Image (cartoon, rainbow, N blue to C red; front, side, top):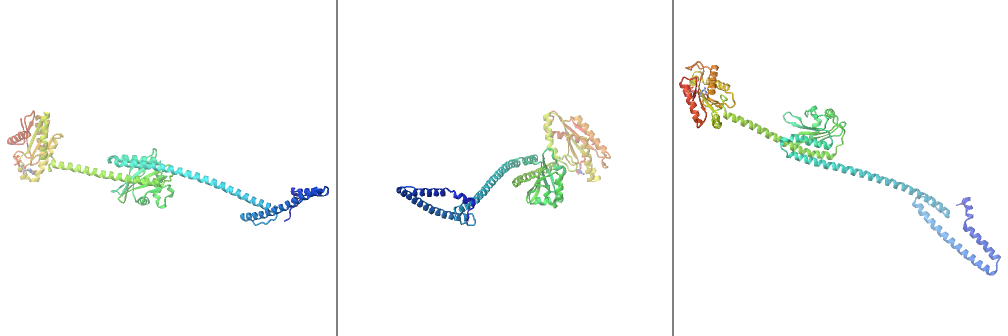
Length: 498
Ligand SMILES: Nc1nc2c(ncn2[C@@H]2O[C@H](COP(=O)(O)OP(=O)(O)OP(=O)(O)O)[C@@H](O)[C@H]2O)c(=O)[nH]1
């Protein structure tokens, strides 16, 4: 390999060459211009220098050999074409190349390392944010879970007649927690085969679903009800609805719904209702855990509604039973032909009224009425005409005795009794006359009567006052006695037992 001229020139002034030249000069002067002793000393120095030079050449050769070896190793290490240099210069040049490549490699590695470090710190930041987000979401879900379990378990415990209002409040609490603006509950109406709005909670100033839609039939929204039969409907945006859901899309848009969750209320394998949780202000990405928690809440709502339904059924049954009891009681107290009180009820009431009159020291009048020659009416006009005549007299009784406290009863075939609490005798006699005239005015035909062309009545009256009778039976006997007297005196009259 040829050295460039500049390097050749530089090498001529290398210190070792200059030193060699200085030594040769000194040797020449020592050998030519000195005595024998000095010449010997000079020779000794020259021989020493020669040995040193030989040693230096050997060391140099060994160094070069070693250098070549390292050179080969480095070349193969960095995948360069193997260089073979016999000179230090070649080796150094090669080393520079190698070191440049090594430096480039290191720089590249450093850059990669820097990039890697940046990547790791980005990833760490991403993970940190992800963890913070997850923690936030977990906190939210934990609070949500607490809210649901507290509110809905309370709902199961409150009396069924208070559930209606409390359920709306509970749904409102859930809505506020989820930051949504409307929750609506629709329940299945078995009779009309439709879902009917039953409860709704609304954030202020937001439109009610109920005003737009109070009942929904599966025939109108087949897609909706098919989805509900499978599970919750989760809509993040109305745009994602399939074509088959066009009526639903139109209705939801009309209801200003941006996103919603609809939870079916399932019981005994059927859908008994559903709840819609509507976001009206913005599109929502619902969390899967939110839906899971709402499903748990749903089970509690179903339990509440089923309880409430049972309560209503029991209430209805109780009311029906009460009505039936009242009817039964009325039947047992009423005379079927006239609708007046019957003998049994009269017997129940007479003692009560007698005791009351006794206690309050108020007069109590008893009026006994008996239709005149009634057997003859039956015989002449027939039994049904007799029944009609009895009914006509019952009507007259009801017209004359309008006070609630007055008790008119049919106590025998054609015998009637009237109990008049807090009624003095003269007033009772007047009323009896009014009654007698009222029957006369009705002109119920009685062709077989020997005293008139129509049905007439005989009335006997007795009054309990100031303890004049010890027992009701005595009062009754007195009235009966007066009636007997009215009959004896020719009938169609009023007789009072004074
Ligand atoms: N049609 C009809 N007749 C009845 C009913 N209950 C009783 N009677 C009849 O009423 C009649 C009562 O007759 P009596 O007790 O002899 O008295 P009367 O014929 O009214 O004669 P006086 O009372 O003396 O005026 C009987 O013939 C009974 O059969 C009834 O529910 N319907």
